Structures are given as C-alpha cells and as structure tokens.
Length: 563
Ligand SMILES: Cc1cc2nc3c(=O)[nH]c(=O)nc-3n(C[C@H](O)[C@H](O)[C@H](O)COP(=O)(O)OP(=O)(O)OC[C@H]3O[C@@H](n4cnc5c(N)ncnc54)[C@H](O)[C@@H]3O)c2cc1C
Image 1: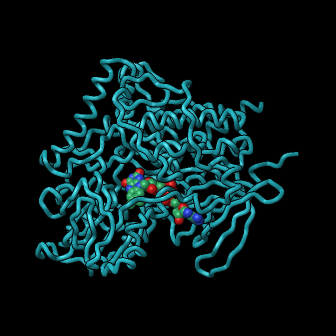
Image 2: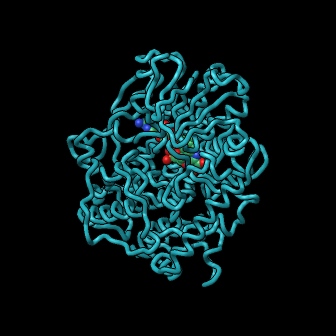
Image 3: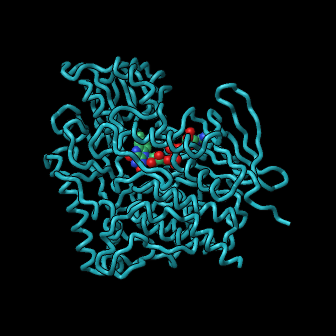
C-alpha cells in the first residue's frame, strides 16, 4: 500500500520568499515532516539582513510583494516604496510567526542524488559553522535556491585575473555589497577629485549596478558606470493609478502563449491591436524618460525595450537621490554602450573595448548571477531529471501568428544554446509522474509574492497526488516544455535564457496573471479572480485577497472528488 505523502519527509532548500511560502503551504496542508535547509544565517534570501543595503528598494512594476498570511506594513521610512529593511523585517516576522523551529541555517546542500533504492533523495550537506558533513534522506524535495544566489563573475574581471595583472584596487561582486560597504567607501575617492583620480567603476546596467552607483554618489564618492545597455524602467510625475499599476491592464498588452480572452486576441492578432500595443509600450518608455528629464542624447537612454524584456524597474516618481536624477546631474558618470575587457598593465586601470582605459580604485561587478542548481546535481541526477541543457529542435507545430511579435529583435546567440524542461516552471518534465521533486521561484514575475504563493499550492497538490489537469506522462510533459521553450524564444528573443538555468523555468513576466491562471486551472480552481464586468475587468485591482482561501478551495475540491 502506498504511504500517505503527508507523513513522508520533505526538504525545502532555501529560506527566501519561495522557500518560506512553500514550507508554510505544505505544513498547512498537513505535511508533518517539513524541513527548510538554508546556507544563510538568516531568513529572507536576497532580503536577508546581511544582504540588504542602504538604497535598496523594492522595484516591482506591480508594486506588490507579500504573502497572504501576513499583511505588509507601510514603509518604515515613509513614502510609498518598500525598502530592503522593510522587506527583511517582513520575512523575519513571517518566519518567526509561522515557521518557528522549521528552518535550519548554515547548511549548504552541495550534492543531490537518488539513493540506490531509486526512491527519494539523498542530500550531501555541509554545516558551514561546524564544518560537519552529513548525508540526509528525504522522500521529497523542493528547490527554492533562487536565481540570485551564486554570483556570475566574468573570468577576465575576476579577483584572480586582477591579481595576475597586478591590479592594486579592490574587486568585488554586488552579492557582497552589504558586507563590504565600509571597505568600499574607504577605497572610494571623493566626487570632487580631479579627472585623474581613480573612480569606483561599476560594471552592469541592472538594478544592482544602479543601486550601488546611487549609494556611492549619495555618499559623495566618485563613481563611473560602464555597461552594454541599461535596464528599462517606468517612471512618472505621479505614481501610476492602482487601476493601471495593480490591475491586469499591462499584462494584456503583452501576448501570452495562449490568448484566453477576446480582448487579448484583438490586441495581439490584428493590425489595429498591434498599433495600440506599440503605442502603449513606446508611450511608457518615452514618458518615463521625460519624467526623469533624461536628455535625448544621454547614454541613460541606451536601454532595452521594456516590451521585449523581463527586468523592468519601477522607479515611480523620480527621487532626487535616485540613480537617474543623480546621473542626469552628472554625479554618476555613465559610459554606455561600453564594455570592460580586462585589467590594464599599469595596475590602476581597466581597459575598455574602444581602446580607452579607465582609472579604478574599486571594480564592482554587477554582472548578475549564475544558476544555483549547476553545482548541486551529479551528472546522472541532471540526466534523470532532464534538466541538462539541450537544444530545442525547431518544430513547425509550434508557431504563433501574433501581429505583436512580427517585428521581434533577433534571437540572442546564448538563447539558442538550450531549453529548460521544467513543466509549468515547477517540475522537471521527465520526473513528472514521480511527484517527488519540484522547484519554486524559477519564474520571473513582477508580482513575486502572488506567483510563488499560487505555485506553492500547485506543488502541494502535486505532492498530494490531487487530481490535476497536468501532463500524465513524461513524454507529454516534455512535449509541452518544448513548446514553452519555443514560445519563450519567440516572446523574449533577446533574453539569453542560457545564462541562469535556475531563473528561467518559465519567463511569464508581463503575463504573470495569465500564468497564475494556468496554475489555478491545473488545480481545477476559478481563474481571473480580480473580477469586474465585461468592460471593467482589465482595470480591476489584482488583490492578494483573491488567493487567501486557496487551501480551503483545494480541500473542498478534494472532498467532492473523493465522495
Ligand atoms: C539586489 C537584488 C534586488 C532585487 N530586487 C527585486 C525587486 O525589487 N523585486 C523583485 O520582485 N525581485 C527582486 N529581486 C529578485 C529576487 O531574487 C526575487 O524577488 C526573490 O527574492 C527570489 O526569492 P527566492 O526565494 O526565489 O530566492 P532567494 O531570495 O535568492 O533565496 C534563495 C535561498 O536559497 C538558499 N540557497 C541557495 N543555494 C543553496 C544551497 N546549495 N544550499 C542551501 N541553501 C541554498 C539561499 O541561501 C537563500 O536562502 C532582486 C534580486 C537582487 C539580487
């Protein structure tokens, strides 16, 4: 007789938002043996107390980031923007209120494999405090290791390359920013020093790079940003009204893999729809530049299109101490498009691809993150789960005649390298029938709290073997993930999905509400929960209240099916 899944052990790896809500949902669903294993010393993942830093603010276009069991208090420092400190406080409160005694810290999981019995999982774990190594066995596993844990450091800019070139300055990745702020400040020259004084050189155009630059400029330090291009952003003279920012509206101007409503079909499959969609996205980008007073010839305009990308920062109403206003005022030097190729021979500079060199006292690498999975699995585990990189074969069955995809930019060369076989961005297709392995947090969403919470219910139902609308065989599931892969390459061709496997399970991004509807539908639950009538539904505010009773809804469904 098969055992009751609720009595079997589950390891949740990671204590960020995904790990916390996954463990919470499993426990509420009756799983009696759930352990969170985290290599961190504190909860919160990227919002943990030793990773947050001054100037870190929540940048969600949707303006939300919380979980249903706990209300998010207003920002402590006033205003309408949650800081890193607010976020950290929130997750620490969540853990102490709901997960007391469930989290084991300082445990680095460094290998995951099947035991010889072929059932369950063996985890090789190092205790980072005591140095003790052990192997533990669990029946089920949820990977919540995030996509922003393991820094990506280009070889030519690594501390080793710096040492080999005799570079005298400090080299650090932004993952260490909070821990190294003091030494960074001590090595940074004042802003008013002459042109020959070395600068802090920050490499990258994303949120972390912009945060570091703004922080240093506000501290009166000399700082230069070098990047290929900058992340797009939204901004306006006033905060966007809730019926735009927090509704489904923006998501409708982005095509989803399938178009559920007549409005989406009108917008994405007709000529007039494309004109409207183009107008909205150009207008959004243009009005954001204007709100920030960015001159037309400024390198700050060297951004990618928000429509084709999955990292878009909501700057809201410009703040005089924010990145863009500081750069416009000349307090941050921005070199873009430009590329740092390595260290110069003089020991005090870095070289640029245009032949110039730049004097640097500190090199801050805001160069992103690599997958948190790759070091964790043995070759045969990767093979068994089907998470090994593979080229998605072009298949004429998978095509989308959307007018809004007609002038797509070319496919990034790295995006051609592989496809991810995570069904719904949650479970490896090849393992779908075994119901003992899942991933949460691999899907980039501008409303992360909502998305990971619905995903946690999906995972719990999957482990409980609830009746769900999901692929029944690995072959069926694999076919769907191949279709997803083809779709992602079509929808976000510039996003090099090969760069970070643990963040590219499924790039729902703008269409996160549609993605969440797919997950709800899999569980047999009502979709499009923000309500409204035929005219008002696109403008209804999406509220976390809509998913407050998911557990009860799933319980009721299960009861009906078993009666
Ligand atoms: C500087 C920065 C700013 C960001 N700002 C925003 C923002 O404004 N809005 C937004 O939506 N998103 C933002 N993000 C993205 C952010 O990563 C996600 O919002 C979210 O925090 C990810 O949560 P997670 O639980 O999936 O992963 P994480 O928060 O990264 O947590 C991963 C957890 O897994 C643990 N772990 C990893 N590997 C192992 C291992 N081998 N063994 C044991 N434990 C392990 C880590 O220690 C950590 O506890 C930001 C990211 C960064 C880096």
